[in-house]
Image (cartoon, rainbow, N blue to C red; front, top):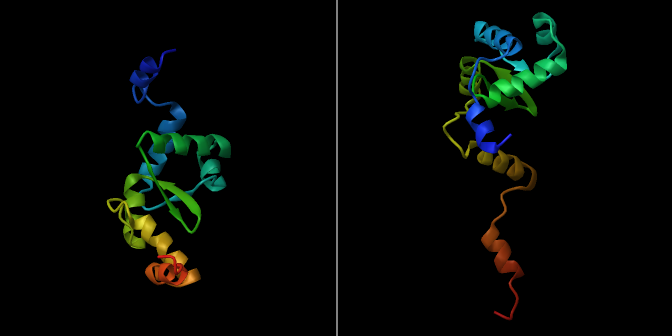
Length: 128
């Protein structure tokens, strides 16, 4: 199959019964988020954990649900649930540099705030 045919098919047509079931469940629980590979969610939906995990990632890829990483774990939920989670965590999706700032703060907490200009002056040799 040609790439152009696949790209036209992307996002078209109805979603599978399993995706519809998971999407409906998430939208019926706008106050809850669920961790990746959640056994309780899989049990309540009557599906295998592997099928649920793939379905969550695919629904996210299609833009039908959202996800957020918290303390190294990935959580999925309806757009409304993840939006609420982000607001309570003080994160906003609109700020593309928030993750970089969080990483910077983590590094500074471990190493201290390194003055790069001072470091360069210290290593600059007499040849300049």
